[in-house]
Structure formats: structure tokens, C-alpha cells
Image (tube, rainbow, N blue to C red; front, side, top):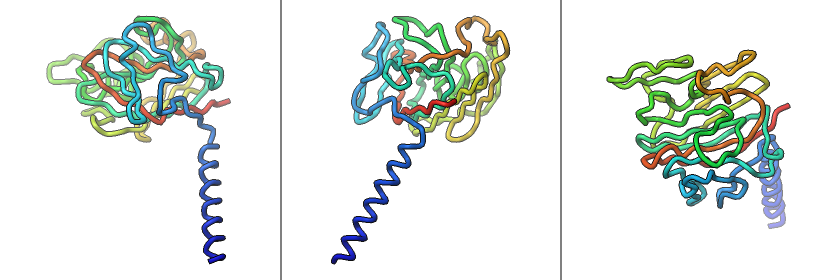
Length: 230
């Protein structure tokens, strides 16, 4: 019995050590899975954001949820951001970085990483919106103007399935991955931005934001975490 107890104690200790090691990989959670602590919604349609069973549910009229918490003073320059996301049919959302809080409208500052598996907008998940677009055209759709287009038969994300979204910014380079697949590697040119009509889309520093696009869209988020890079 003594040997069994010691074995169990050792296993528990090692398990605890493993958990600490995993938490010590440099990533810090931004979403606690319980409420919107550390996040502030824009004044238009703040009800578009809620937390249910550990998941951030984004459903409702146009609005944006900005990270305003304490991690790194709420400002990020070089970073790796990880999220788990699930889209529903015909839904549209997005993740902004290097942005700042504003009360209404689409964010003027920062870049948007598109979240869209089957919404009518042909710019799909994995796009650096308006700059490098992962493009899936419908039968009656024409190629939109502006930015570089990478054509695919289908989006890299699938409605009803959780996928991993990884966004990394290091100096002037932006890398986007979906389920480990690199969809975008973009280096901002000197004197950017490259997207016509998006004067604020340039690298600097700022916070993150999650987009509620329209009343017919519903998107789920969880496991939102960031690692600050040198």
C-alpha cells in the first residue's frame, strides 16, 4: 500500500509539473471562458457578444469586441496570437490586430484576419483582408478589386468544426495559419499600407478585436491566448 501511495503521489506531482510546463510556454490567456472581463465592446450592438458554456458567442448586429485587459498593458507589437474558432453556415467575422478601441464603425486601425467559411463574401478564412485574400468565387461572382488573390476551391475552415487560427507578427512580417497550414506570409512594404482605401492598415502596435459582422452571422471563439515576441 505504501508503494502504491508513493507511486500515485509521484504521478500526481509529475502531472502537475507537466501542466505548469505547458502553461509556461510563453502563452497567456486573454479570454477566461467565464465572462468578458478584459474586453470592451463598441457602443453599437454590444449585445452581439456573450459567453455560454466557456465559449465566446458572436451573434448580432455590427460591433467589435476589443481587448482592454492588463496583459502586456493591452498593447502588442510582435506577437503570436492563437484562437480556436467555429463558424456556422453563411457567417462572417474577423480578428483585428494592431488596432485600438473605437465606439462605432469598422475599425480604422490595424489589419483584419478574415473568419468566413461559407458567407457570400469570397474572401475566406485565412485572408489578410483586402491585402492578401484567400479567394473562393461563387458561380456568379467576379474577382474583387484590390489586394493579392490566392484562389482556392473551398475555404480552409469548415462550418460546424473547430479550427486553430494562428496569427504571428514579427517586425514587418505577418503570418497566418489555419489548422497549421500557412495561408498568408506577407511583408509590409516600406511606406505601406498596400490595401487601397485602408489608410489605417499598417503595422505599429495596438490591441486585438473580434468582429460581429451582421445579424445573420454566428461565430464561436475559445482558447484565445497570446505570446509576446521580442
